[in-house]
Length: 73
Image 1 (tube, rainbow, N blue to C red):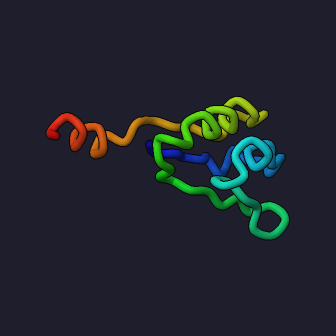
Image 2 (image 1 turned 90 degrees about the vertical axis):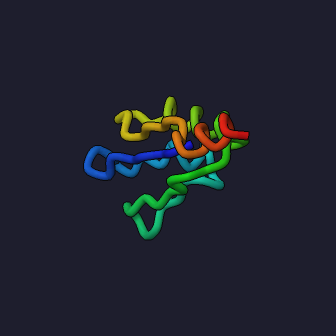
């Protein structure tokens, strides 16, 4: 899975941090840091963070490289 946060849109409301604390954090007062490639096991938390963001700055999509590797097995 790939996670992208539009840092220009993000207003540091920090709702994603409450929804997925292991994947999002504030560095300082307003600088969001996040895990851009969490495992699939984190999907539920990431989806909660996406829905919790009041400005809809978070997007997640399948990692096509992982999907292709799974099909090749």
